[in-house]
Image 1 (cartoon, rainbow, N blue to C red):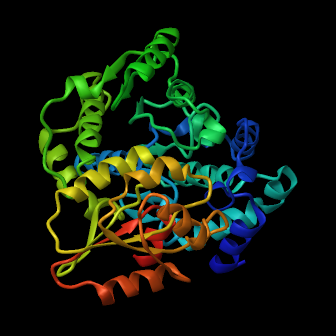
Image 2 (cartoon, rainbow, N blue to C red):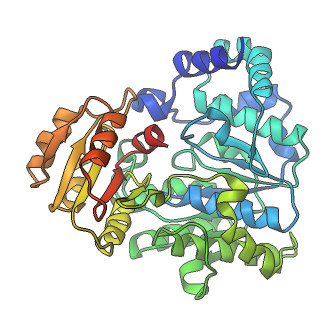
Length: 406
């Protein structure tokens, strides 16, 4: 199969949480362990930093990778989901895995995948780990897909574990309380391996402390320990906490003499994060006059911060291109959105996408008014046509909405 055919097979034949939702969720890591053994246990040969959290784990992972690149290391970066191309998930020093490698890996192991009914995510983890070993990376940033305890990435023993924050998301899988979700994320805390916590609350701190004590893991609360951060190319207000998390993680690596990282590397890594890693969709400006911003925040915890930042913007009229997936709690999310905006409701182009008519009707209950559009691009185009130079256009609600307009 060529690259296009390989992707079609991967997306169509294998359960993929991002597009399908609940049917793709696995409740254990048995398959990942089987695949790892089949591949010769590549994770045993990798130095890793493991990053979990409800929000901010993508930005944190990219910031860490950028800093380590500036420090002179060859850095593997595994993240999810992708915005435009599957290969964004697996990069080394910002360069995506080749199409040829993806095809070879699938073609070589296709019988094993089909016999064991591996999920899209399990297969991707195996691909990333094998690739990083073969390319002889110095250090790898591994972002958890969902949760932590039962996530496919949780077969690694990292140099340090990182948990950015805890919010209510994926509650149908991880539990419907902050404590329950914190328990799942805390599953990445390993025996005698330090753990850095980005943000915490009274509900989650005790969960982390209990697990860290049980695992004899030193625990560091970044929000208490880091006061000043450096400027970054990532401009969202929420990046302040992510930068603190990264700086505390770097501090642990420095103090334990695991890696050599200068302050200059941290400063340059923050400033060059987009150039070094290709990160997109985080309070990203797409145009001026009118100002156009897109952001991948897609749950109440993340949207609260982003929409607060929106309040500080000056404009004559606000236009919001909004699409959500159907497994989000609308009664929790929609009240966060401003009532003084014109809405352009659309459906993200995935199976999980919420029908735009349903979204519009529900939004109307919260005095959010606008029209529905048959595609994200149509909604975005109409917003651009209707907006004046002093207006503001925001595109968001789902990673898949942002992906469509980039």
